[in-house]
Image (spheres, rainbow, N blue to C red):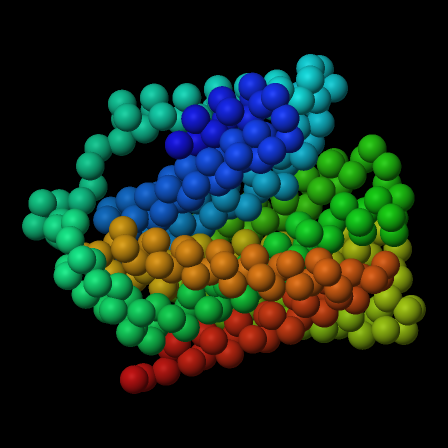
Length: 313
């Protein structure tokens, strides 16, 4: 599906045709993300699963942040169709590698028939699990703040800080903090634990964002570039210790229905974060207050969801 959409977009003769190709790409790109989470749950559990998910979610988040810089380079060297050519090459390489190197992880005894009854039962099991719902809400809330940043970043860097052509470089540089935290989380989670690391990181995110927001109120929502970069690096560092752990906590009870659980949890967190990120982006008013305030509020709400999920039922 992704390959078909890429080919359609690359050879598009009109803007609607390119949008149709992008729509097919979106449908196709959704599958590998769900499959990736299900494969991890099939092979790992507990803290080991959180360790692996930390590295995977680092890729999920870092790639969109460095994509503008890569796209700009391709656009400078060639035309816009070359961007879809690069996507086509990446997709083909990934397909060949996956087909030739990845063994089946779902054991025969864990497979369920592709019929309405067993699938509906698995859906009810996931939807009725307090832990899954609570941690999924927590993941959606905190990821909403990150998507709010993605929606606002170009306006902030270009309009407020006027960085010009350096925008992709600044945009990509902040992702390094996320990568460092994800790597460190993969090391620490085996000793400290998923929930404790996630709670500590969320608490740090809330304190940092609330403190920066108070400072912004004193300066009418305006801050120097270095201050924004310092807050962004610290906030992304905290986020790097949240995503993998929270998703591992949500997936933990569902080793026997990992595929369905990954689809439901992934869909819910994505839809929630897209809605919240869109709201934050729409509230951009030429200051940093909507973004920083969104991180603070959603961080606090995410902590509340984790507390609710962790309580005894």
